[in-house]
Image 1 (spheres, rainbow, N blue to C red):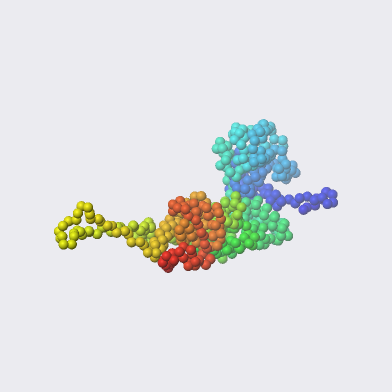
Image 2: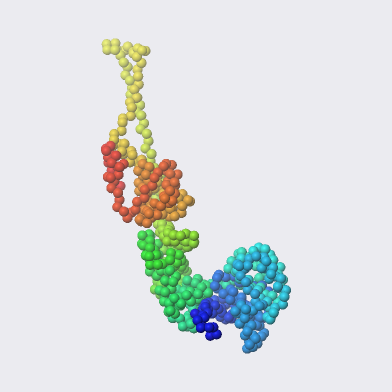
Length: 564
C-alpha cells in the first residue's frame, strides 16, 4: 500500500499492479512483436496510416497496449516532443483519459445499440487530437447485428477516424469485416524475452529472484507477458521481495523435475505401478493434478523435439542446462516417436477432461494407463507380426467344440432256428429284432473332465476376443475401458467370469458399480449369456483352488485339478 501525501492520516491507496506500472509506452518497449511495431512505425513515418486495423493474438501478448501506442503516435506525429502540451496529450492517451481515444470491451457491450451510438458520433470532429481512434477489444464478441451496423462505417469512415479492433478468436469475425482491415498477428513472447523483461523489472523494483525462478514464471505464462508480470507481482508480495524456484512451484501447485522424470520413466518402461506411486506422492505433497498434466505435456513435447529435429534447430531448448538436455536425449532414445505422440495426446486429453471433472487425479492416472497400455499393445502387435502365419491362424481359430459320440451300427442278428430243424426259417409271428445298444453312461471323472474342457473353451474364446470386449466397453464407458486394458481374463466358472487387475487401484476403480455394469453388459453381449464379474488383483495372493466350491464338487465326482 502506498500512502498519498495529500490524504489524511490513515488513508491509503491501493498499490498499482506491476503489469500496469510497467506497461510499454512506446513501440520500442513492446517485447517480442517487432514484426508488428516496425511496420506500424514505417506507416506513421510515411503518412500512410490505415483507417482500420485488426490485431490478432493470444491474451497478454500486447494487442491493447500496441493499440494505445498507435493511437498516441498517430496523434502526436508532427508535434514538438519537448512541449508540455504534447506531454500532457501523451499522458492522457496512455492513461485512457483522452476524449478522442474511445476504448470499450465488446464482450460487455455486444448489443447493436452500443454500435449505433458509436456510428452516430463518428461524424463529429475530434476535440483536441488529430484523429478520433476507436479501440474495440474482444471484437469477436459483437453480435451479428452489431457487425452489420459497423460494416458500412468501417468500409468508408470519415478521414479523421481510425478503428483498431483486437481479438483472440478471429474465426468468429465475419469475412466482410476481415477484408476491410489491415491484419497484424501477434506472436507468443519467447521464454528468454520474458525472462529478460522480468529481470529488468526486478532490478528496478528491488526484487531478488534467481534465474531458475524467473524461467519457471516465464514458462508458466506460455507466451503472455502480462501473465508473467502478474505472477511476479504476486510472488514478490507473498515472499517479501525474495523469490526462489520453490516459491514458484508452491504458488503454482507444480511439482519438481524428479516427479516428472518418475512418471516419464514409468511410461517408457511400461511400469504403471511406479507411475501411479509418483503421481500419488506428488498429490500428497500439494501438487495440482492439472499442473502436473501440463508439465508432462511440456516435457513430452521437448522429448519429441529432441527425437525428430537435429540439435542445431532446437531453438526452444536454449534455456535448458546441459544436464536437462542429456536427460531429454535419454528419453528420446528409449521412446519411439509414435509412443511420444500418443502420450502427448493422452495427457492433453486429460487436461481437457479436468475442466469438467471433479476428480482431476483420476483423469491424470487414466492418461498414464493409456500411455502404458498403448506401449504394451504396440509391443504385442510387433510380436504377433513376427509369428508364422500358421501360428497366427491357430491362435485365431475358434475354440474346439467336442463332437457328439456317433452311435455304433447295429450288430448282425443270426437266423433263429429250432434245435434239430436246421434250415427252417423263423415264423412270421416272431420277426428278428435289431437291437441298438445305448451309449455307455459317462463315469464321474469323464463328466468333470467335460466341464473343465467347456470352461477352458469359454476362457479361450474370451481371450481371443478380449480386445473386442475393450472396444465395446469403450463405446459406453471410456474410464472402464481404460481400466480393463490393465486386466487379463483369469477363469470362467459357470456363469462367473474372473479377471485379474495389475494393481489394487485398478481393481477398486473397476469394482465401481457404473464401471462394472458396463463391463458385464459387454460380456453378456459378446458371450451371449448372463455372467457376473469378479475382479481380483495381482498384488493379492491367488485363491486356493482346493477351496473353490465347483472344484470340490468335481473332486467328489472323481475329477482332478489339472495344472496350468
